[in-house]
Image (tube, rainbow over the protein chains, first blue to last red):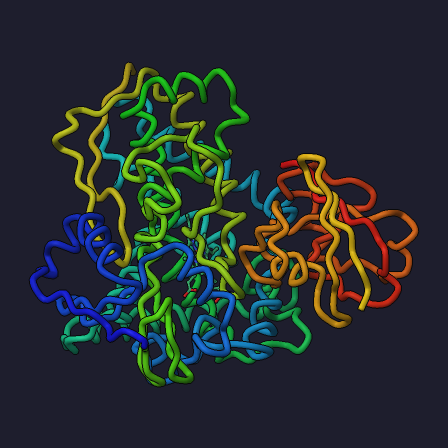
Length: 393
Length: 105
Ligand code: HEM
């Protein structure tokens, strides 16, 4: 006999935003699939279940033409499967592969980090979200997309507006208007830059899509550039701050990383496991099926809570602790399956090899101004939103 | 059905029956071969299904794509001359009795 989906109706939406992990734990222990009323979604929270779902895209589809994401940004690769997805993915991968990141993007990303840090270095204090992580993430992304000359605040505004629009389930007209404005802003920027990237092929994502075989249509380019803007800025920004926070709060681990720089990669993976920048993404059922014994019906949507899976104590000991020396196991912060994050290698290089090591090298004796001032927020997207620090200038 | 021998990182060996047309990565997952994680489930995006094949089979497998070639340089265990991503290799009779090494990460 299969079980029915259990329901949690005494959690407030604000509880999730403030700290989803206690909710995740409760839901994980309650059952494999649990409807959380406040979020209006059926959550899958156990590591093994999420992994199994990602290995069965025919049952758990990403295709969802009616989704808000498609309405806001147009039909895009995140909401396609099979060959349609593979073709669009292949059109962007040439600019995001690890070797290309190393050969083409490492130097410009280093220059961006150097510039951003140079602007604050002399001050001895800063709020790292606004003055460091956001500009680094936005400027690096603009370079990789081929959006030369678009300033970082515009990138950040577009990104946030597209994200808010994709999550605008209450149909707030102001959010919808801003999302529309961002979408047309991105489209005009693409229009302005198309001929440059066509005439002068280069490793940027825009150029890569133009060189692809079959060539991508302008609609595909608009949509997938918007996916990258909505999905490639916050996560890098948030993981820069999370990695800095994890190390500042754990001086013993920090000392070992400084002594042994090859540990930076491991520290980054632990940071995104610890506070995963993307906490949840959806899949839609193409047939009735059981998830570890719980029946879910065709047409329904489940939220794969990778933030919860990354804290599953069936897999990770003391999951709420930042411990870069924990037993080595793969995590789900970059998702899994065919939609496995296309920007994984960019983020690994930017955050763990360039930005954060440079921060600690240049901002001597960096420390939190006051641990009580640090704010961390969100559940679908989560990260530090406010992090004042001081250093010896 | 070809038989494939996985040489594991800890020195153990695991011989499994494989099905023609499945990928080597799928064969490894279906038989719970340790060390083959395959996060991206066969999209050549994660480099966590790295294996090392004997020289003699490499030529029978055809050329490595540019994408796989790039990924292999960044797999956790260092690349060797017989390195491939197991998700990009289809099992065939030519692979009968082949030894596939899972390199230590
Ligand atoms: C620490 C940083 C990052 C994290 C944690 C992250 C996380 C994720 C996750 C969980 C997904 C899967 C979503 C789903 O399956 O619905 C995803 C997809 C994606 N990410 Fe990232 N991301 C990061 C950085 C980036 C960057 C820098 C870029 C662009 C340069 C990027 C581009 C994409 C794209 C294009 C997809 C869609 C892939 C597809 O559908 O095939 N990401 N990311």
